[in-house]
Image (tube, rainbow, N blue to C red; front, top):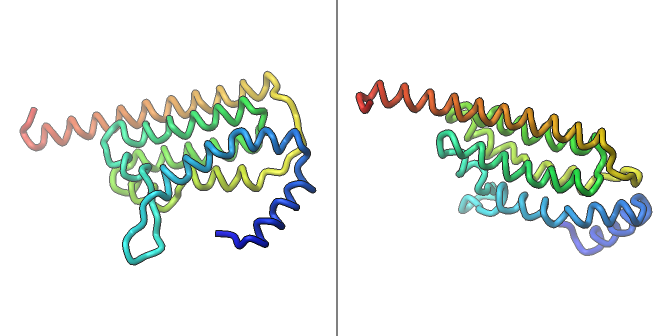
Length: 178
């Protein structure tokens, strides 16, 4: 973590870079993103190491619904960020982190290992902390953009569920359980 003097410098820099309106918007969603980063990506530590992980890769182990559940939780935070009028480019980068985690997460074993490493919620929290855009109001185009990203996420999630169910059905057939 940051030392006390580094944290003070960071706060001074924030004041200089971010106008008051933008700081308020970020302050409204920052606790949500911090909480998600902690719970979904960093809440547990491998004993004897510095490696941390959260519920995201563990939930991802549940075929069909794990990666979908994690993506939906992250998408809720994205919706809150859009409601606060955060810039589209920031929303786009956050969306790409969620989509990448979901896309790779669909692949059995490889996707689970990827989730342990990638930590999309930590990445999104870091993006939010580094965000220093000028203040602006939410526009209709922002909602269209976020809606399109969420639609793409929904399609990918549905495809992930379909692939998982297909694999489970084939596995059950191969084991003579069906």
